Length: 146
Image 1: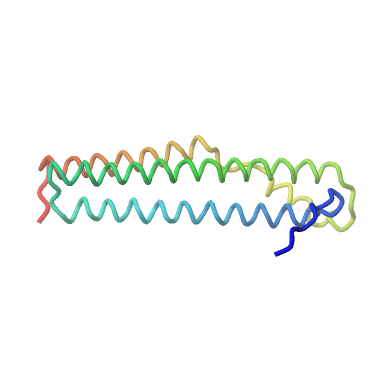
Image 2: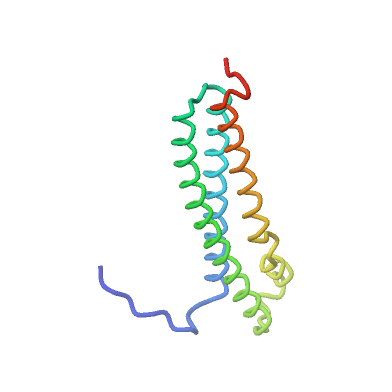
């Protein structure tokens, strides 16, 4: 494949930024879906099989490695979304284009940050701690799985 010339600033359109923002947002939702499936699967395991004092720590080490790695990806993805939102907002403020006028309100709404990265981190850590508590309780026989 031949290398392509860099895109000139004048060639980069608002629609390109919106497409990138949408793509990055979809990727973030996929990360959340994968994390949610992993947490639910882990909870199902903790509630359906009796764990031992050996198997629970091994499972939890793998779970926390996954959870922390996924959290790093999620935070990076959300940071990129915030950067793109800021760029789109700046572009909207600096362009007087009649083609954009009917969409300016919707585009401005799309540039607002509705999800704080720290709220996301807190929600994920709480979920991780719930899995840890149930798995530890299972291994320590605080409840009996039949």
